[in-house]
Image (cartoon, rainbow, N blue to C red; front, side, top):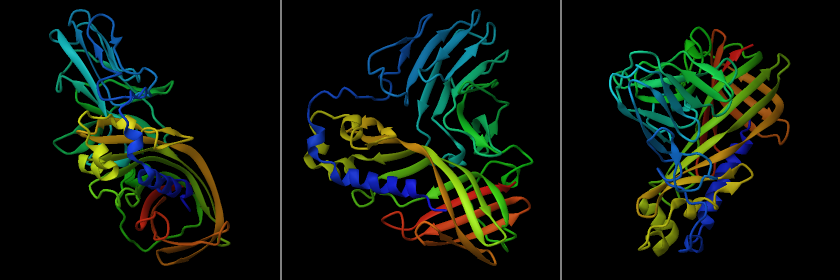
Length: 385
């Protein structure tokens, strides 16, 4: 299966970075400026009030706080719909409740199962006398056999703890017993999927197995070369990408696939990267917002990048990936645990390793041609239908 959209996106971003010049970093006011705690910061009182910034910018990392009385309870929420409803008597004392959202960091366990932002509800560790209702926005669509769940990170085990979750109207709700870091994950319920748990990125060789059949994809991990490596070696590039659909391998040696990709890519530029890209304009006397530096450069039909930070602190940008379904077909052969596929569209040949355990398959696909600066690796998992 060729991942045409993703490899084209990598090349486009690299080209945009290479073509970025100091002319885009002039001293004028940028009407799309957006930084942490600006457009989405709210203040206390009986009604949360949005202050300053650009209300038109798509919701991104933000912070809010509100004083909640123990006797009356109340609701605290961000502009993207993330929030908590606290009933009267649930708190032991009047409390200033805080919510801060952020882009998921690469060090999170099972990073590819996390969809959307991370949400830190505080004061961290606060417990409740009665259940509270926590709501988070649902970003993307769970794959086959997956469910959207609200999870919190157990720092003692460095594992996610899933909560009983309800999904409706583009949101998920759960009833946690305490405040901590919460996320929305697309996970496989126990008893199905990849070893009865969420998708993991590891791949272990085995004897292969009978690949004939239709496989519903659970998830995938991508390891593409950093398109900004040539401009700055300390930059980072991560996918939070939807990968759903199915692949069918027939007994006559032909295959078909329908794969939907989408989601977001996140990239960071430390200060030294900005200086490398922009020269003196990357370190001006008056800091320039990262949105002004990169927001328009990384833009296509899926939308522009949303960036935080400025030229004095470094930049983090998130770029949406257009949701697109790619259809494929071709022929294949199997030798042990090696799958060799030929694509009907252009005659290209891909070699993958696969391992089948029960009704589950995991495939590791290494492509040395696409991806620009080096080989790209995709590990995907599926369940036989």
